[in-house]
Every structure is written in structure tokens, then in C-alpha cells.
Amino acid sequence: MNNFDWLHGTWQTTQRKTKPLSGSDEWETSDGTLTCHNLFEGAANVDEVDLPGFGFRGVSLRLLDPVTQEWSIYWVNSRDGKLMLPPVVGHFEDGVGEFFSDEEWEGQQIRVRYRWSNITATTARWEQAFSTDKGETWETNWTSEFTR
Image 1 (spheres, helix red, strand yellow):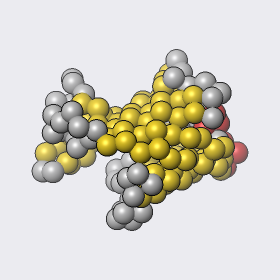
Image 2 (cartoon, rainbow, N blue to C red):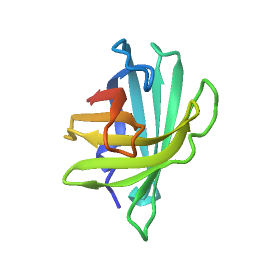
Image 3 (tube, rainbow, N blue to C red):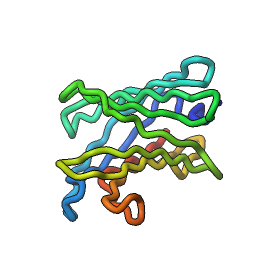
Image 4 (cartoon, rainbow, N blue to C red):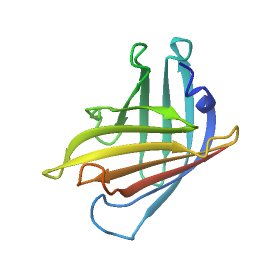
């Protein structure tokens, strides 16, 4: 239930993103701050990330399904205020969290993966990747390094 307890509190972050599925090697970078709060005694949490270099803020809401023990992660940003649906869904295994959804991106069906890794008391890494071949290959389009 408490898979995300390590994320609670305030983090400094460096985020890098590129245009998804473009083959581009041009990355934008923004430093920022993320603050995460525990809810439902560890069965949920919410964070807000401020990314001034990208010109927006974002909010993640994570909810644990007590039956399946899987997390659903929802995302919304201040640019458009639209909730990302469907959420990515998954779990942690051996210290790595992987979460997936099937979506449409610019007219094509894709698989989305969020991955949390390199988790310590003072560091963590998050990345987003898209796949156009049902998860056979992945193209990373957003990475975040977190430090305290």
C-alpha cells in the first residue's frame, strides 16, 4: 500500500522532454520543484510540480486499487486543464515501478509507459516512453531526475 511513501515531501527536479514519436534528438530542459502529499494512509497521494522553464505546472494523482494492488496514475497540467485519460496502471517490482496505458497519439494507437527507478532517500528517476508496436520497442520522450 505504501509504494509511494518515499516520494512524499519536496524535491528538486530536472526535467527533459522532446516531441514524442518524432525521432528528434532536440530536448527542452526545465528545473523545477515537486511537492508530494500522502492521502488515505498511503493508498493515494497527490503531487504538484512547478516547471517554470516549460511554462506550466502539473498535478499527478495516484490511487491504489486494494483488490488488484495496482496503482492508477492520473495527470493534468495548467496549460490545458485536461485530465489525462486513461490513467497509466501498474505496480512496483524489485524497486522499479512500471505503469501502462493504451492511448491514441496524433491519430495512431500507442502504448504509454511510466517508469520509476533509481529510488533512494535522496534520488529518483521517472521517465515516459511511447511504443507504436504494442510494447516491443519504446521511445523515451520525457525524463525527470529528482533530488533532495
